[in-house]
Image (tube, rainbow, N blue to C red; front, side, top):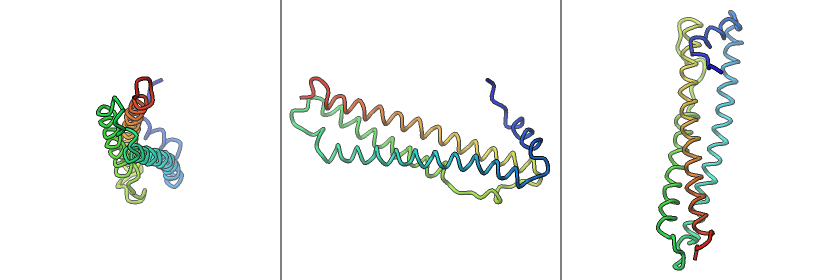
Length: 154
C-alpha cells in the first residue's frame, strides 16, 4: 500500500473540507491529539523503565559479589537508562512541545494545511525515533535481567 505524499494529502483534505477551515482544523487537531496521547503513554513507559533501572542499581541486584556478569549488566543498565532519558527528552521536546493551530503560518488554506502537515510529520518522526529508543532500552534491560537471573547468574 502506497502512502500519499504530503501534497496529495493536502489536496485530499482541501477537497473533502472545502471552504470549511474549522472542519479542516478539527481533523488536523484530532491527529495531533492522537499523537500527543500516544506520546504521553510512551513517556509513562520511559518513566517506569527509568525507575526500574534505579531500583536495580540501588538495590544492588547487579552489584552482588557472586554475580558473574556484573560488568556487562552494569553497562547494559547504564545504557538503558541513558537511552530512556534520551527517548523521554525526544518525546517532551519533539512531540509534546506546544504550538497552537492558530499560530501555524499560511496565507491561504493550502499553505496553512501544508505547514500543519509538515509540523505533524516532524512530530511523527520524533515519536518514531523515541519509540525505537524505548524498544532498544527494553532490550538492554531484558538482557541485563537474563544475565542476573539466568543460568550461571551466580
